[in-house]
Length: 255
Image (cartoon, one colour):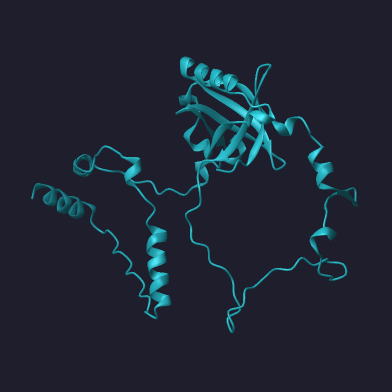
């Protein structure tokens, strides 16, 4: 597995050389744009808005407009703006897992040790892991990646660490912005629905689930490639009587 970031995990005055790895992968099928008449791929050109000239990669640099002046930067200059902080993942403190709001959890990453040739050592890495296990805590960390600062939750995971990127508080929208129609639910209806839910209660096995949407999508694509007609699915009927549907399900449970 290829690492996407490397640096040091700062635990007080201890610096632990680490590598960061993406813990998830994309299962989606990607479509590309083509010319309808000859199926030629469509490419986007980078064109200067002033002279209309198509630019090559070496002619393009990053810049920021300050007081109407275009200030240009090389990649090396951008890298050196924060040479120390961008290579350090700092532990801000420790807390209980239950204190981290579920809505803030975002992308998962694995942490691994750095190559010994680059100063990597396993002792400090596993020392911190044992501390988290002994205290039954998680660590809140911050780090800079691709010129963006992130916060995350670091926890012991198997023989290493799992880092979960957290959303900032201001990133999460308030549910008050969501329209929810208020409605009363009578006790008889609730009791029937609870019985149905009881019959559907099971021991969750994460490993038994696999992505099926894209598998079905690929089957349709293969049918299209074979010259078959793709027939759209029929929209499911709207539930008009909750009581009748619950009674139907309860009757099926008794059979």
